[in-house]
Image (cartoon, rainbow, N blue to C red):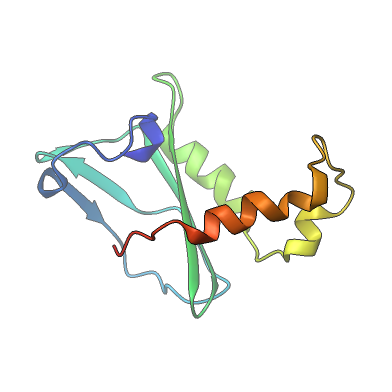
Length: 121
């Protein structure tokens, strides 16, 4: 799983995600998803899922320490509800500055990039 920092190198057929009857609709915040690997429940994982709008959802998985109570952490997380939201490009750049200015605003480099062939996948 991606949360391990190794990427999705596992055989995906061995992963089984379990969801509940909760409504997966825009504005909801869900922490009840669990998963198993090769039939073994991975009980120290906590998922936080936000459904931002009709077209966007996000999920974050955390591996809890051995001494952390998953049920208590799930309840705490559910109370805090750290929702994700869509932010504009302008918002991302607000207050930023150019660290390494490039002559001509990198027009030559951009033109070279555009000329390169594109991957079709």
